[in-house]
Length: 330
View (spheres, rainbow, N blue to C red):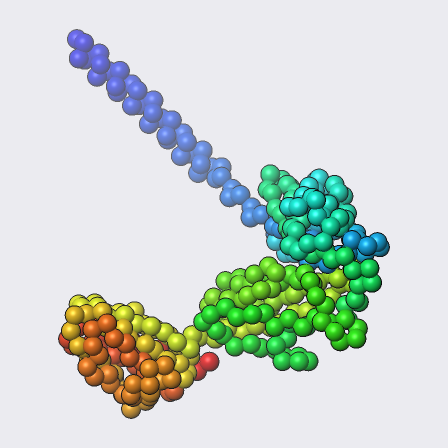
């Protein structure tokens, strides 16, 4: 009897659950749940931007103050009509003070003070920064020329590089004299292509593509900015490490005229043969011959240049390794 009662309870419970599921399915069929609409990018709080990101002041009035304005922006870059409270802070209040309204005041000489503006809209917090340099110059120079183009007076492109290099900044007063202690700020429209340090010290080519770099400076009340279209091509050098039994290695892509370096990490000399060795030439690094690579010793390296576009298969029988070099005309 107890066993039967338990079974009866189980069946009743099961029928109740099934009935609820059927009701739910019927309800869903007659009144489907509408998907949530995608956020309107014109209303989506995306960033906070300051009107000045690099400021040079003097401790001598009237060059000792500047006003910062912070603007919340949407994903489209348009200003949002928000009235949230913006909080300003200085990393060195003894050197540079900032009021609750964004008024910056220089108190003592020094470089690199960072003023931060922060605001929360709809539960999302964003911030932007401005670097402030302070001098004690009573008659500061007037910013007359400001350029980030590497070839004066103008240039639309700069080639890709494997390593960071100094920023080609040209800033001078109205007499053509360089301005010392000038704070500058740089941004990239696409940091995945070109990454720029905020103070314009170094730039890094991250991947092939196109980006616009913007630099700006506000010196003693005068603001100037400049932009540079920056195109990153394929790498001009690539490295391939061959170990014993490596099997199929990934393809390496380089620009036309680029160089590939092979490193032998096996315990024996190896040969590397190409599918079209006639177009494989001597490189500028190791200058160790052209065409197929013969007798590459353990721990050694050999380089080859590829001046002709195409796909080059390579193979090392001793190391049981193979791969491909893709040379593109860009």
